[in-house]
Length: 118
Picture 1 (cartoon, one colour):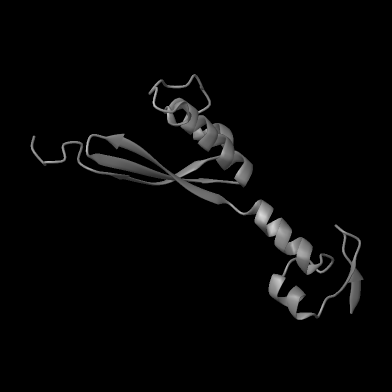
Picture 2 (picture 1 turned 45 degrees about the horizontal axis):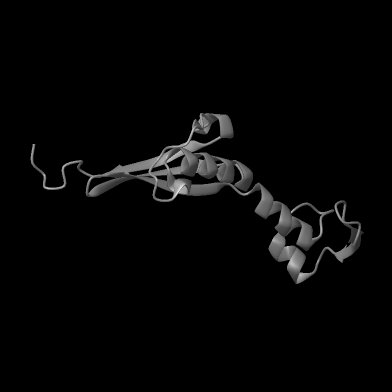
């Protein structure tokens, strides 16, 4: 059965293999469904904090790529990542994940004393 896509106004077959694989609503073509899923997909990122010879890794999930990119830009600025070898920290104050919809998934931390001594 032929229908017209509500997003791109192209005709498509609702019983085609591409449409069946892509899923989505009955009035969305397969290409638009794939594009919308990509835009709406949550993004998981991981950041590390060096502490001596060990490192802590934090995994976070953001609702979309734009928010994840904004967080990574702020993270790199405030940790000195974008400063070359000058080691000066940036001046950002938007590091809070809750303002960008981020949720912490996991945190893996090593022993801050890599030799295991107290």
